[in-house]
Amino acid sequence: MASLTVTVWTLYRFKLGVFLAPMRRHPLIIVALAFVAILGLAGMFVFGYFLPDSGILQGDLVEALAVPLSLLAAVGLLTSPGGGMMLQPAEVDFVAVAPVTVRRFAFADALFQATLFGIGIPAISVLSLGFALRTGAPLWAALWTPAMAFVALLAYTLFIQAFGIARLLRKRWALPLALTLFAILLAPAVARVVLGTMIAYASLPYPTTAVAQAAFLPFGRGAWIGLPVLLAFILVAVGASAWATNRPSLPNLRGTFGLAFSGEGKRMQQEALLRLFGRLRRGDGARLYRPTIAQTMRALHGVRMTRDGTLFFAAIFGLVLGLPSLMSGGSLGSAGLFVAFLLPVASAAQWMISDRPNLWIVRSTATPPEAYFAGWWVSLVALVGTVAAVIGLASSLASGTVDPVGIEAAIAGALGACAASLFCAAKLPYAPNEFSVRPLAHMVLTAIFGGLVALPILALGFALASNAPVAALAGLPVLAVSAWLLHGFVRATTKHPAP
Image (tube, rainbow, N blue to C red; front, side, top):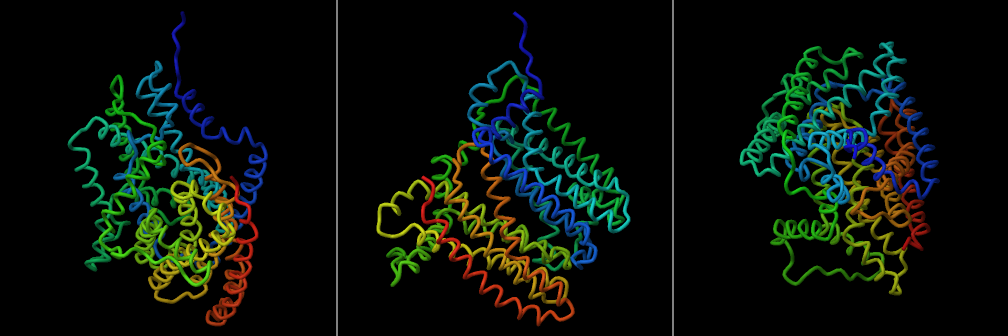
């Protein structure tokens, strides 16, 4: 009998096929996503073309990008999943016991992770193309910048995999080394914000700094020193991966997402949150009943978001983007909008895990489902709008001015993004314990809807750029009308949530 050889390409196609399997049952999803992708890429090209004239590109871009990259890389070191891999239970049960080497198994997963997390790289490419055409930069920048992003992402994935495998092997040095690297990556940010000591990321030989320096080279905003530093990190990552995968098998493998989104994973998370915040609770419990059903629903969702980790996610977003906004000198003026687009998706994902199975309780009572979702929308807008506005304010203060239009745009984006996220939660639910394309659809639709709602505010800002107070005052009635319309939209579209 001929021996069976399982290649990296075969494993990669299998993982990608499992991830995209829901689309085969619903071909219209492919058409919708293709349409959204075309619109999104066109919008990114236009944005990149007019970006030089927008005034957003202030300060040191390398510093502005290196700060959030360092924070995200630091968090990834401590939160890497089991084995540093993203595994379905089927892969653990069937693929991991097949005649395939650990190295091929791990490298195929690294390619899959780089593909999944690099889904925005085509957008970076068309944005770079528009920027290059506008500024006269070489056209090969449209390939150079996304190539640097993908190579760095793949190298980081290999590095994280090595740490994950070391933890599977119960190496005693793995956690102390991860904590040390975590502290090194955060040290300049902590020194600047807490101690007032100015240590620029752009002056340090960090891999995250090197990525930014290499990516901005074609536009004259980077530095050549980033290339050898990035190459050195790639060699370290490849060497670490070669050491970690040089073994016949891996112990204690598990389906990462099966654990993270299963009842066991959710129970572990809630127990951790109770240990952390349990002493702050009222002794006689929370009083959720209010004079009206709308007020009761708002109170209910406020307590639920404390319990299911949404407030924790908001704090993480505030940390990861708030510090860079304070340190960017105004380069991250759009950070508030980014939070407004992403945090509602994370909140809906948490609700899918913790409370969607209990939606039958709402259906079996006299309370209309739209009241439940409308109360959630008000509570979520209050949370997301506050975080986005604070981050936008921090960014504007870092530039030495106050940008009321940017803050209003962040709040408007929160209004639209939260409405779209609740619509997706009600009409396009997904099973959290398995890979699905629907979470990506949630992210795309939420970002588009939030951007459309924020667009009138931004247009006022551009039209009245010479008179920011007038633009801010003109934006207030736009915000009020948007809130009224979106509240009605949420109530109208969530009357009959999907079973």
